[in-house]
Length: 611
Image 1 (cartoon, rainbow, N blue to C red):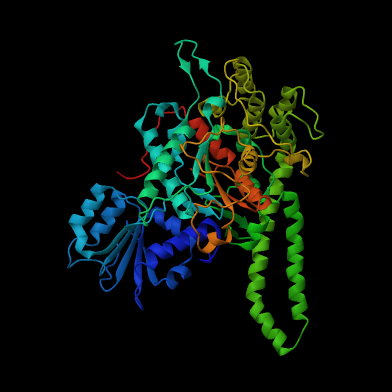
Image 2 (image 1 turned 90 degrees about the vertical axis):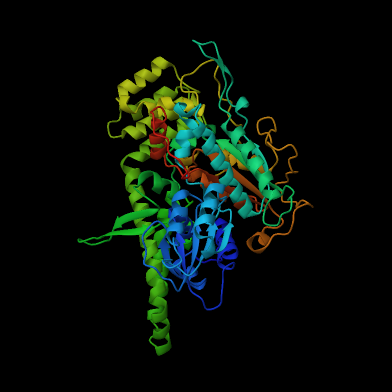
């Protein structure tokens, strides 16, 4: 990736350049950089090896592994403040005579606990030239998408086995700290809001104990923690000055807020591909053409211009567009080849690598689109109409569906549909009816023969989503915006609820009772982009958006690719406001259902950070 790339990736790279590489730069001197697993992934997301070479880095090493000593070179340690990483640093400088490197420049991703700092101080202080905390402990997944990369947070936040556990509080603390490093990187001190749970689900009385049980207040708790950490950070940041609230908002939402978008089959390219195909770590595997077709791999990354252009388009548009692009490149090449002059041939030779690369990428995306369509035509197409009718409660003509069970039954009776797809359809039925009866649920599970996976349905109650209907439990849903005038495909009529929230927030239409601020003095929000007089000037990429507001959305428990797409669509529609969305991790429907199923099972506690 080019270091000058805009968005979160570019901001992270610029911060690393400024706080790490520029901080320890010396003319004509090459260095080694030591990384742990976390920082390896972070760097790989925002730069390439050529970028590191330009910063004087000649070797990249893993701090955990045994390495050959290079005593004439200085080393940069970009690591997380964990025991394992700190031990790797100390082991390199046990004695002066056996030191692996000439000196160490140590940069921690975030706050280093006193016990680890003291351990370094007593073991190898003389070898350390710098020791700083740079406050980047999130991943810039895309230009407007970030993750905290703590998927275990889902279990810890939602499992009933964790309800009274210190582990749940610990993971909330870690999430809050990481969100603050995102705000610091964006140079924002936002007003923090959250979806009030007390207006989401009404209270109910426990039938046996008589205890009044309310919905969870995860979003409220996290908002308060973030507000507290923001206050502390901007009192003690590197400029040692108290920073006023910027004209930005951070909205924290619980995953149960919109369950429909998590299980619906999406037909936009990126969401569809990650749902239907076995894409792992953004790597798509496919076979090349020909009888001896070899298996090949391609990484789906935003830095590739064509992928960024088509990833949010509907599959029908993608299938039309890619062949046109292939013909376009072929015609350019043919036109160039037609000129037989020496200069024309010289130009062709220069362009050949470009043409080859361009065509290869287009072939990859054509393969990807065809694989998606193959799955779609075999089974998914029949599911989509049912899913849309269940999700919206209306058919393609806008008429209200009178009997949702009649819509659901053909899917359940179809033997060609997989269990996961039937479970997704049952869930959409339950979500649309605000829960069903215990008897009806038991019959559905038994008739579809999904007893072993029934917790994929039942455990949604732990996300405060009604599964068994009750007069006492009613989920008050966010009022939907009227999109009847918008052009849509019949099988893609559903819009993620989070898109409505983004637009309502920008237009200042969020009800303050449902979306309260956790701060006592929230900033005046103006989504149209009027700049607060208190806001200080921004530099580089931010200067481009100096007259605009910024809306940050954080969802506890994972975001979907359709919700990620919404952030880009809303930013494009409202030029004066950039939307950044993030979560603990990125979800696919299958991954979420597996995580939902595990909630009721006991699980060994897993620490996010080494103690």
